Image (cartoon, rainbow, N blue to C red; front, side, top):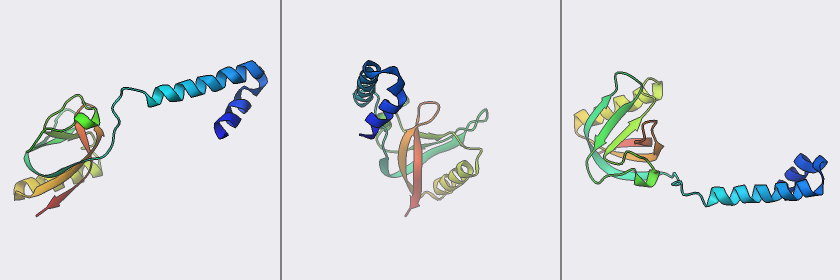
Length: 134
């Protein structure tokens, strides 16, 4: 009902035919967006994994880890599917904290649990949050 009210207010001055067309356009666009083949992004927990490599790019703010176990990233719709997680904010306080925590886990041989959400600017899965265990 609110959508109808919005459309009527938006296109009210154009007459009844314009309002009918506009409502059909809104409904059509909504149905297209729900039927889109683009992969839905949702949180994906990778479970406990061991970090096998860690690093950062020297030319931008991207940092990464490589994890053991099965490949991931398909469910996120990422182009680069594999065993690497990247984050684009390595120069921020959050990115530095992430790198420092994961480096400490790597050096101590601890397992990490990574939860993915979406893809980095380079198309790799990116992390939403993480924790160190054992």
